[in-house]
Image 1 (cartoon, rainbow, N blue to C red):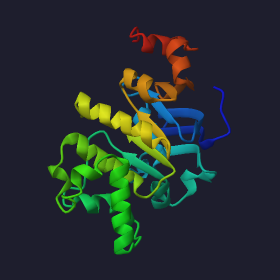
Image 2 (cartoon, one colour):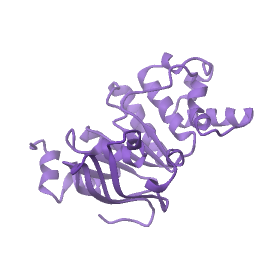
Image 3 (spheres, rainbow, N blue to C red):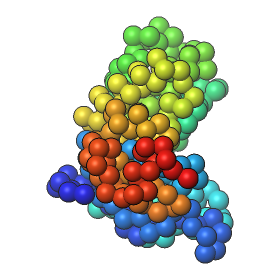
Image 4 (cartoon, rainbow, N blue to C red):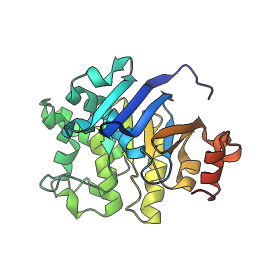
Length: 256
């Protein structure tokens, strides 16, 4: 894949194992671009979500998971940084909308600041809340309900709130793990439009099982199989002229 000079993150020989000698992700090497949407595709169990969670250091919550290799984000080796610092640089959004249920909409947006012990003045807080909710197209829908719980919102609104929470800290990169799989087509379309807008500010990596979604919104695509990165290229090129037979079989539905 031809890589431009706006590389924001490099993966080098990245491997993740849950059991000694058995790899969920094996020797993945790739350069990812800033202001770009990269889709990670592949069949269930191929290591897509595992790869994404390694970037955010989530595997350290489990002592049996071993991560080796390098993840360099803005020339910082993520695996040697303080995990809280990593999570400020790499915002995460999960498959199911998960606003913190006991927090108001406003407090959900500010949750990253609270967890990191970063204090803001009232005016700064108000500005961050308004800007973050505006960026996800939610401000006009919730500006009169900021003190209500996030759980009163629809599923699509909840997911946009979770994206607002992730971008409030101004991360370098936004990680999304199948963020629309629990949403209806209308809410899905809104999230896709939102991501196309947000890539003007952030690098975005999205795990998706939805090939048409990858074709619609991503600039680059990775195809993974059995933990290995089989192909990584410009999305249009991969979908029209894949260089690997396995990729072609997956994209045409003749896989497995």
